Every structure is written in structure tokens, then in C-alpha cells.
Amino acid sequence: MRISRTSADWLLLAGFCGFLFFFGLAFFGLIGADEPRYAQVAREMLARHDWITPTLGGKPWLEKPPFYYWQAMLAYSIFGVSDWAARLPSAVDATLMVVVIYLFLRCFRPGFHLDGALMTASAAGIIGFARAASTDMPLAATFTIALLAWYAWYESKSRRLLALFYCSLALGMLAKGPVAPLLAAVIIVIFAAATSDYRLLGRTLWVPGILMFCAVALPWHIAVQIKNPEFFRVFILQHNLARFGTNLYHHPEPFWYYLPVTLLGLIPWTVFVAASFAETVRVWWTKRRQILDSERALDVFLVIWLAVPVAFFSLSRSKLPGYIVPALPAGTMLLAEYVRRRVASSESPSLFLIVLHAITAAAPVVPALMIQYLILQHRLPWGRGAAISLTFAAVLAIGITLTLRTKLGFAALRFITLVPVVLAVAALLRLGAPALDSMLSVRPLANEISHLETRPLPLAVAGVSRETEFGLAFYRNQIIDRYESGEVPADEHLVVAPEGSQTAIAKQIAGRRVSYLGSFAPQGFDYYWVSAEGMREMSH
View 1 (cartoon, one colour):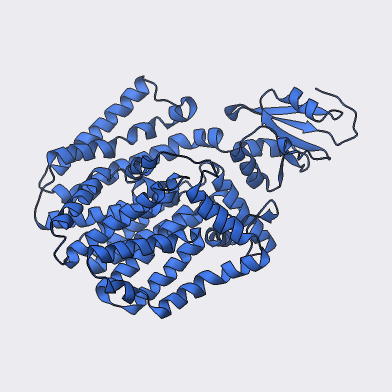
View 2 (cartoon, rainbow, N blue to C red):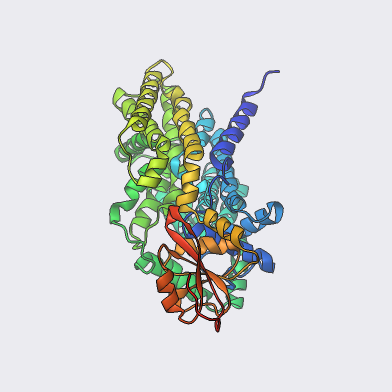
């Protein structure tokens, strides 16, 4: 039975999204401070049946809006609480974003709509954040859907699409705050200026749409403010304004930080995205006094969309890689338009761009194959393994170059570039997962401690990072006390500390017994049993 092209497209989208976003979500535990923290907030909200106030350790945690938490709560209620369920919302959101890109391009720029969707799905930044329990992908997905709905309305004048724009933008505000409507407004204003169509701004300010936005976004903000009077100060003043204007949260980076981050996030498509960006800017500048045709108008819109988040967050005093994820889909869609026009005109890519692209696309295979060395030794050691990895990457680069030099040219770009992407992701998951789990996640440590216990005991930490503290809070599902904050449990408890800390702990809790239980060598931790207050001192 012959499969239609549309059915084949959907099968390819399902297969690639399933592999790139969902496969192996449980291969390694939650990493960093944000993943376990957000996962635990959602668990506590679900346990209390509270859809309003995010809490961590039983106390209000008002850093972020609730959209990710609501999604994680739904995943927990269906699949149970686990690290992979905590990552599920981002994978689902990324898939929805890719599907909407496919539908948008199929309706408004048919021909290479599958290319645009798969290019987006396979960008390094999209893959990485689609597999993370964080608020970045929910924002990127809702923001992307909102801007595509707005541009679709711009071309079609359908009010239903404008309504979708306002509703998606409201979900973006629920995903990460006022940055979603702010960035969208800046992009639309600049686009109106670029097209010399300022009446567009008045048409965009549609009263029913504004009411829809308020109906979706405001109820939670009002409810959480009523229940937590400190919400405005904590969320708006501290975690939005102070985070942007000061180094309050200790994430300083140079002004140019987001330029390399964006280029890395667009791998393996970076070279041709840069080429399409430069061409669009050049064409717009030469024809800036003319009315843009619909073909070029989308390109200019995508260039503005790609540039605005990068420029905006470059001004921020606090910088994290996830901030520019909402810009990445604009780059891959811009590339899809670039490819579509060149295939239509039978234009072949230049050898210089082909070679650069081949090297950029094949290069990630090397660290993917050597991931264990990178994690354990923080370097790529020269030896047989490195030689094999480099040789393999070189063969891939040569294959990409030769394929793009055939008559197929740009038409083969998507297919041949996805080969190293799939290989790199497979290598990372299969070869790197054990090292990632043991070196960067506290899941194995929490499992070791649980196997030693005859009954659950309180757990404290001393001299360890926030990543360890939040990870233990999730995997142990309990409040973690911190010795250096004066939070020493009076009852019998366990404590996790850097190796060789028994004497220091015994001094800090003089008069109580401290017994060494074991070590978790990969991360340099010891864990001890501490007696309740009043018991006779005895060190072992």
C-alpha cells in the first residue's frame, strides 16, 4: 500500500520527535539546580492539590509562573512521579512547536515545510531543552506558536489566528512571565517599521484578543497575589527587573555571550542560518525604500524574531543559555525559506559554505563519542578513541560535502545533515548516560542512601552545592536541612558532606555520635549517621 506524502511527513515527524525529544529521558537523573527544583515544586503542588501557589520545602517558591508546574503535575498524575515524567512537559511542548511550524509552513510556504520542521527539531538547543525539566521550552513553544499565529493573521487576516496569537502569548506569560508579551511587542513594532506599515500596530491591538489574553493570563496572577502578598515583590521586582538589571543571581557573562550561544544552539544548521540571515539583511537594506513582497516579508520577520531576543538578553546583567531558546525556531525557519528559494531556482550551494557546513554538522560526533572522557576528565585525551572519533567525523564531513555537491544540492541538505544529528544523540544517550548519571546527578547517591536505611530518616547536607541539595530534595522527597545555615536536626538523621568531613561535622555537633556509613566516590561525597541530641558521643 502506497503511503501519501502527508502521511509520510507525519511518520517522519513522529519518529524524529520521538527519538530526539522522548527517547532515553530516564537514562540519567535530573541535573543541575533547576531540574530537580522545578520537579519538586510540581510534586509538592500536586500533593497539596494546590494549583495556585508553587512551594519548595513547604514554603512559597515564587520565582516562576505555574505553566510548567501544571504540566508536570498532569504528567505525575498520569505516570507517577519520576525524573522522566518531570521532563515530559518540555518534550511534549517541543513536539507541539515542531508540528505547528510544519503546519504553518505547509499552509503559507509549501514545498519545504517538512524541512523547516525537522531542522527546528534537530537544532542542538531545541534538543537539549526539550529534554530538560525547565520553563525554557514551555516558553519557547508558546512564544513560537504565538508569533506564527500573528504572522499567519498578517497574511490571511483571519481573526481566529489573531485570537490564537493572544491566547498563546498569555500561555507564554504563564510559562515565564512578562518577557513573552514584551518580546512579541518589540518584534511586531520593529517589523511594522521595517515594512513601513504602522497601521499594522493598530490592527494588532484587537480588543477581543486583549480580553482573551487577560482571561487566560490574569486569573492565576491575581489569585497568587491574594494568597501571597509578597508575590509582586518577589516575582516582578526581584526575579524579573532585578534579574535583568543587576547581577543579583550571580550569572554574569560578557555582553557578546549570546552570539556564540545562539550559534551553538543552531548546530548543525549554523552555517546556512548565518548565510540566510546575512542575505535577508542585505536584500532588505538594498530594497528598504520599496514595499516588501510577501515572500521577503516573512524573511524579514524571522530575522527580527531571531535578533531581538539575542539583543534584548545581551543587555541583561544576568545571562543563562536557556534565555534565547525562543529565538532558535526563527533561525531554522529562515533557513527553510532560504533552501526553498534556491531549490526553486536550481541554485547550488557554494563549495565554501558546503565545507563549513559539513565540518559544523559532523564535528559534534567527536565529543558525543568521547563524552565519557569529557565528563570524567574534562578534556579530550589524544589516543585511539580520539583518533577513531575524528576519523569517523571526517568521513561524515566528506560524505556531506560530496552529497551536497551532487545535482541534489540544497534538496539533500535536510536528509544528509540529519545523519550526524541522529548518530550524535544516540552516542550521547548510550555512551554518556552512565557517566552523566554518576557525575552530575544525585540519583545514584540517593539510591545508595535509601538502600542502607531500615527506615526513612531526615537528611541534611554540609558544604555541598545547591545542585546536590535540590537533587536530594527531589529524589528523597523530603526537606533537606543545611548545616551551614544553622539547620541541624535535633533528631537522629543522615548528613551528606564532602569526603573526609567526619571530624568537622563532629565538632559542629559536639556531644552527638557521628558514624560513617559510606562514600559516593564519583562526586566525592561521604554520608554519615548522626545521633539525636542527648546521646553519648562516640565517633567511629
